[in-house]
Image 1: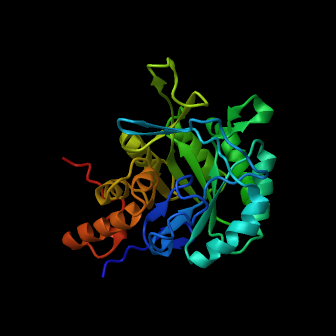
Image 2: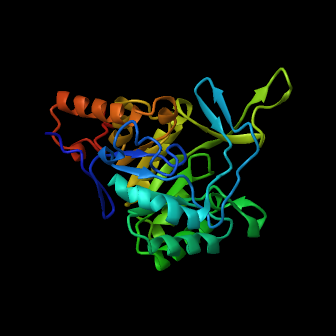
Length: 305
């Protein structure tokens, strides 16, 4: 038997495979294909205080090496999430991470307080890509002081573990990650999508209704991998890798550079069973290498000649 158990702070996951936010609905989108309880955890789509209708269509555009999306954080709001979705999530018997976002620091804190009172939630993941309306629309995740402030306030008002999700497109993810760590974050997740754009040549118009969006998929994997490598060296808290993971070998690369777990997203949109197939590939590789515990592989990258 191979021990795939991994720890993210105090949270113990049965394996390092996590469904990424925004790609599995409210956590139960793939339940008819397999039991998500077989995975390490599932991250819900972003939840806000009030419902959001999202961006105008088109919202999705496929590129050569990835997927552009501009969903606009559409969701049902925390009230309906609690009444309609949490009861279903409890039945999944999976570790559930709730992704949250707001347009002000206070909204983040309010959400954390509300969700802290609910049963069946294993951790919160802070989406810091939402514009801060009180500061002229500047994204929270661009400013180390804001990252530290939000994280600290949430940790002071919430007993749940707090994961901070960052984008590798920010000027210095290391500075942002160390700010989150200083404020008490339990883990860093990198990378969120990277800002991107596509044009429809025939119409001479942007391919997305919101003009720009975020790119995910294989094209961003090298960027995300480098960010994980840098952050693992810079912080003492666990780092969760995310970006372009489509195979067991991709997972192994992220774990090799020090990620404690990974989040899989775009691959699920192509093949709903991708996480289970990737998990099986991971097991087979470790078995072939005669590695009995995933912890023996994590961070074992060789940098010597």
